[in-house]
Amino acid sequence: MDITFSAEELAFRDQVREFLAENWTEDLARRIRGEDEEFKAAQIEWQNKLNDKGWLAPGWPVEHGGVAWSVTENFIFETERSLAGAPDVVPFGLKMVAPVIYGFGNDEQKKRFLPRILKSQDWWCQGYSEPGAGSDLAALKTKAELDGDDYIVNGAKVWTTYAQYADWIFCLVRTDSSGKRQDGISFLLIDMKSPGITVNKISSIDDHHSLNEVVFDNVRVPVANRIGEQDKGWTYAKALLAHERTSIAAVADSKRRLRDLRKLLSEEISGGRPLLEDVQFQNRLSNTEIELMALEYTELRVLASTADGKGPGVESSLLKIKGTEIQQAIQQMYMDLAGYYSGVLHGDETAESIGHAFGHDARKAYMYGRAATIYGGSNEVQKNITAKYVLGL
Image (cartoon, rainbow, N blue to C red; front, top):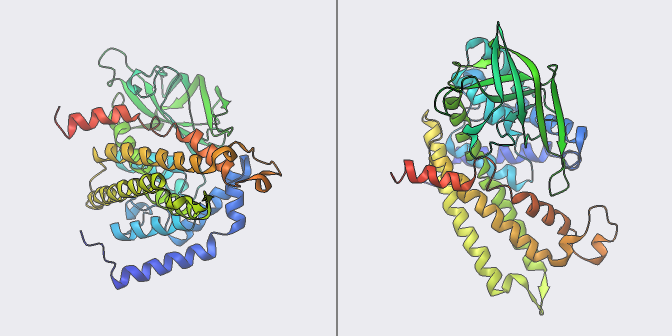
C-alpha cells in the first residue's frame, strides 16, 4: 500500500483544512456540545455546511448525491476533520438507513427519502434493540400485522439514540413467527409523528440524555414504507450493521484523542517529571498507538473494498472489536491521568482552580464508553462472526 500523498492529494488536504478553518467555528462547537434543541440545530447546521460543499455523503452513489472521493481522499478528510475537533455526522440517516434505501429500496423510496436525508430535513433513529433482544437481535418481538394497505405495529424498542429529536425511525419488526428466528423479520420506515408512538427518556450513566425507549401501540405504517420483501428484513439489517460497525471503529477520532492525551501527559508533573516519562504510561500509550496504527490499515483495506463497489464484509466486525477496545483503553488512560479530579462535577466553578478542567469530560467519556463494546452487536458476538466466517470454525 502506497501511503505517500500525491500533489493532488496534498492540494485536497489543504482544501479540507481551509474549509474547516472557515466553517468549524468555536460557536458551532459550543452549541454542538450543548443539550436538547441547541445540539440538534447546531448539528444540522454543520451537516448543511458539508452538504453545501458537496462533502456530506462519501460512499453514497454519485447519482444519489454521494461524494466521488478516492479512499485516500476519504482518509484525508476524516483525519483533518478529527484533528480540527469537528464531529462526524449523525450516522443513523446518512451512514445507516441511507445505504439500505439506495441498496434495497424501490425508486419511489429513493426519491422520497434520500434527498431529505442529504438536506438534514429528516432526523432518523434506529429501532433494533428491545428489552429482551439486544445482541441476540433475532429474538425481537415487536410485531407488525398486515391490515389492508397498512401494518399494525405493537411492541417496544430500547436504547434508541436521539429518538427525542427524530422525525423517522427505521425498525425491524416480526411479520412471521413460524420459521427460523432470522426469518419472518421485516424492515419498516416509520414516521415518528404516527399516533400511538411514545418516547420515554433514559438517562445514561454519564448523566446525559441521548437514549430512549420507543413504545408502539397499534401504530399504522403503510406497506409502502417497507424496504424490500416482507420477511426478508434480516438480510437488509445485516448490511446496515456492517456499515454501523465500520463507523463505530472511529479511528480518526481515536488518533486525535491520543494526540491530546500525549500533550496532557507532557504537562502533568509527578515526582518532578512529566507523566509522559513514566514507564508504565509510556508502555500503555505506545501499545495503544501501535494497535491503532494497525487498525487504521485494516480500515483502509475495508474502504478500498467498498470503493470497488463491495459492501463492508466481515472485516467490519474486526474493526468494531479492536476499535472499541482501543477507545476504552484511551478513556482509561484519561481517567488515570485525571485521577481524583475526574469526580469534579460539570458546572462546578471551582473545577479549574482545584484541578483538571478535563476531569469531568474524562469521567463522562469513560462512563458512556463502557457501552462501546456492547452496542452495534457486542464484541463477543463479533468474535463469533469472525471465528465462523474468517477462521471457518
